[in-house]
Image: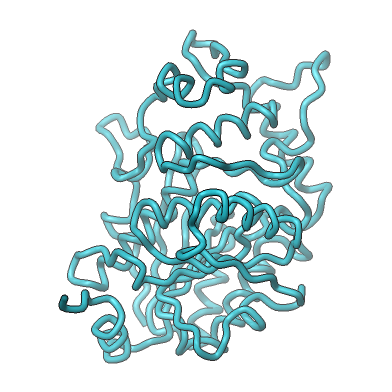
Length: 333
């Protein structure tokens, strides 16, 4: 089994100062051009403020501002003309989500003579796609990949379906509901399915109280706990299945690893975000015990935030070569 460190392609570039930055291909590096964003999405103007440094920004403690900002970003950078989510559902930070996809593209490139496989011949499975459908939207626009998104929440799936239909993306993004909360891949991966990559942003917390406490800690660190102002309990929103599960992230990714073994021949590479650094080594040990042939840990950075994703495959070199030759290579004509 090979457990390499994150390779240089899948790590965010770092300038000479050592300040962590986004992936080199990430469209969200540098400061946003708010006049351009507002010109394309006039509703954003209502939510633009000056931060303590006198720079234009938005108030990330305002859920409406975050939602409208995301809509403007998706329109300007990814050509998504119609996007919205139900109140109270997770409104993801787009730059970090894009970084995960760029890291996965780099991973596939390292397995493909340095070339990122593009186009609809690459089929990705997004576990927990959410109301925002964010990974399929970005992954399709950046790399042309085809996506299947799964979720246990019927309202979230209805929202995702509306987004897909409104933007005419039904040919390349399909959605499935997981009807059994005990399972992740089972009942979603069908016998004839073949997925080149799976991705997942697992529930981070073990309870609602823990999720609320985490947001309060963030507001305190940002100096936003003004007693005169009512702040949202959850800074980016989120429903139960999006934010917490019994046992938290550690338990979820352990279950993800266990179930991946059952569909080992139908998936080339599995992956998951791991927010808590302390959960990485137990996951690696579990994957080794399950018989993973290769495992890769790739670091990601955004400002002061550090994260990583873990990817693994049960296919040996010969099986991977056959997979690539039959699925990733462009067909003549």
